[in-house]
Image (cartoon, rainbow, N blue to C red; front, side):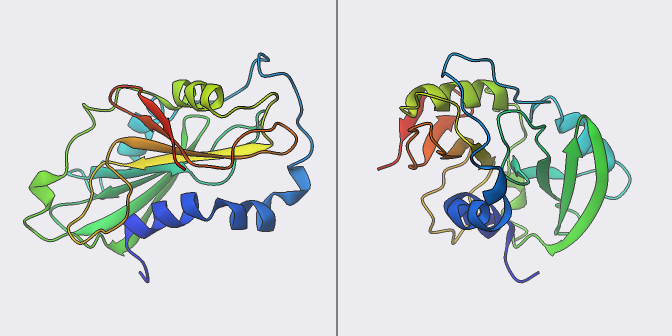
Length: 203
């Protein structure tokens, strides 16, 4: 694997503009509604976690969640594909599982998770994860300055910050980024704490 799992989260969230321009440009202008309109966020990330864990029950039964994120930008009317990256303390490997509509697309071995033997005991469980993706979307949108529905969004967080990780990404803090379209939404990252629901906007 040419990059560690931490870089996958940072790359997909920090460089969302590149992803959106290259992948979903054609769909970016098709949504426009008032900020009070109901938005379909689809099956939630926390609600789909059990499906992802089941996909690894044979391959890596000891797997710990490292990252959860939308696998691609999501529009207001589409169903998200959730990407979960797990790590196995026993094998030291990382595994990716995609889930959509509560159905797993199978598990893929990503190679080394890049964590030392001494780090695995520090990787927490998911008990701290209290704020689910649907609530995160609502909170982030409220803080975004939008006057309509954004064209699309991505979101994700990591559960553990590895030794040597010099990024500003903190564990259990959702990072949300919107593609504005005509909504007037900020293009800054919006942070939503997955433990408390506290919201802040990066400047």
